[in-house]
Each structure stands twice: as structure tokens, then as C-alpha cells.
Amino acid sequence: MEDTSFIIEGGERLSGEITLQGAKNSALPILAAAVLAEGKCVIHNCPDLSDVRTALEILGHLGCAAVRRGHTVEVDARRIANTSIPSRLMLKMRSSVIFLGALLGRTGEAEAAYPGGCELGPRPIDLHIGALRQMGAEISEEFGRITAKSGRARETCVNLSFPSVGATENIMLFAARARGRVTVINAAREPEIEDLGEFLNKMGARVSGAGSGVITIDGACRLTGCEHTVIPDRIAAATYMCAAAATKGKITIDRIRPAHLGSVTDIMRQSGCLISEGESTLSLTAPDAIRPVRLIRTMPYPGFPTDAQAVVMAYLLRARGVSVFTENIFENRYRHTGELEKLGADITINGRVCVVSGVPALTGAHMCALDLRGGAALAVAALSAQGRSEIHNICHIERGYERFDETLSGLGARITRKKI
Image: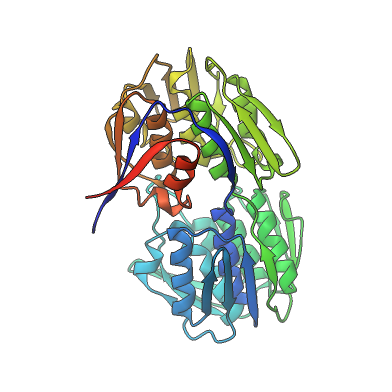
């Protein structure tokens, strides 16, 4: 496979305005939910990402007509022909597992390999499997594949031991055509869950409480096509905020929902950033000297998102003091730290705790992106470093950021692509 790298000449102050892309973590479950509709769904603000392209491939394999026109995707699922997803597609991304709930809800059967994606440590889908079984699905696991069969989901109350985003989504998708009411206790509260609930309601489902800890779904016999606009990507926003702040720059982000970023903007303000928010805009001005942040703990929403941990760490590498991170979601979420150390970062890891001692300067280096958000963190750090950096394996970055290099170039970054 041909590798492509980003070449970054650091030291340029980023400044300007960007329009935020649609949320990857919202678009993917919404595309899966389109399988439930006996009609055409029109989805606006759908980002052009490799993960989204994989989801469209899955839809096409299932027999759906899926067409992209700019940032609008049309999905016609009236002629579902297959209920088995090939391993090569499942292995491309972790969130492919949500097609299980959608296929069960629409056809009563599904077969798929265990999902792939970034290697962030054990992310068992036991919560997904257990919930679907409780709702009436018969599931077998053999030779790395999952086979599920069911009639319409039965009325039940699912109490999740952890507010898993993916498990909550799978429950919602399967329950959308349930016989009676399905209640989810300790549901994930992320904005992307609320967006999925809104989409399902437009299709004719009856979902209430999405975005809170308790969600109820009253099943509908039939779901129809609808039109929907995906929410803005809060993690992409955090990334560009960190890139501007790390280079002592200034950025305005348009088409954003500031309320979705509360825990991130709190940390950025603690570090000295000046942030002003409008109804759909956010402006950040970097401090002259970055202040360290005593403790950053990743938590389920509305806590600090694990997806923002790496990019905020990259920003704080040159803080005047010590910042401490505690990763409470994924075990291997510090894989990027070894690459950051190549730039001269001072990082110490002890289990789930990561101590970052700020250094006066960073120096460009050759690095390799090992996962999506870690790869973005390497770019943030390289932008603030002195000299030239090269980041390999950028396919990880492009799973979650639309035209990443073009967006940064528009803010004044010196970033180019190199085919190897």
C-alpha cells in the first residue's frame, strides 16, 4: 500500500476562520440508521472521510443505493439484498458494529466480523451483545464472526454498566422497530446520541430522552425516509483550537455548537486562552505564555472527551509547568506520547496517568501516526515545533478530518503531502 506523509515546517502562527465539518461520530450511526427506512434518506453536512466512505461501501454491499453529492448523501434502503457484512469492511473501522442493530431492526438478521479501527486497547463489544440479547436477539460468536437473528425487539429495560456510546446506539437502532417500549438506563449522553435520536424521530420512531442518562424508545412498525443535517464535529473543533493555541495564533470557527465543547473550552481557558462564543461561532486567542493545567481527566460526556486528550496534550507540551492527564476510557490512549518525545517533549507515564512537563521548545522530527486522534496530536505539536517534521501513516488522520492539510494551510500552516 502506498504511504503518504505530511511535511510540516513548524513555527508559523495560525490565524483565520474555518467552517467546521460535520461530525464523524454522528454521521456514521446516522448512515447505519438509514438501513431502517423503507424510503430515501437525505443526509446533509456529511463529512467526506475515509470512515464515511467505508460506511457507504457497507451500505452498497447490503443493497442500498448510496450516493454522495458534495456534503449531502442520499441513501435508499428499500431493496436490502444482503445481511452479511464482509470482514474487509468491518475491519476498517470500529463503529461498523452499529450495523448489527440496524440490520436486526430492519431484517431480523445480521452477520459480521468483529470490528476493527484504532488499536486503543480492549474495547469489548460485550455490552452491545448483552443488550441485543436482552432485547430478544439470538447471537452466536464463532471464528471471529457474529451471527444474530431476531424478530422485532421485545419490550425491556436495559441497564448499561458503562455509558457506552456504541452500545447505546445499537440499542436505539434495534429498538426503533421494537414491540413496545425499550428503556436504556445509564445511556451515553454525547451530542451524537441526541443527533441520532432526532434522526430516528424524523423517520417515524418515538425516541425520548436522547442526550440524557435515560432513553426510551417506543417501537414503530414502519420507518420512512427523511431529511436531516448532521451536527458539527466537536472533536475536529478542539483539534483546530489546539493547533491555533499551540502556535500562539488566533482562530474563529463557524458553524459550531459551543455548548458541545464546554469541558474542552474550560481547559483551554485554564491554560490562558481567551475564548468568546456566539450562537454558532467560537473565537480563540492564544496566550503569550501557556499555563499548565493541574489535572485533566477523561470522562464520558459531559466530561472531558477522550478523543480530545491527545490534541490538548500536544498543545500543553510547551506550558510553563507540569500538566497531568488521567485516561479513564481507553487503556492504550497514550500511544502517541512516544512519537511526541521525538520532538523533545518531556512525558512520563504511569498506568493511566500521564505527566507532561513543559519544555521551552520542540524540534521537528520524523513521526508515525498510530491512531486517529494521536495522529492529529502529532500535527499540532509539529506546527509549534522549530524546523521540519514528517508524519507518516496519515491514513489514520484522514479517517476523521476532512481535507486536514488544506484546512491548516488556509490558516497559514506550511504543510504539504508527500507520497512515498
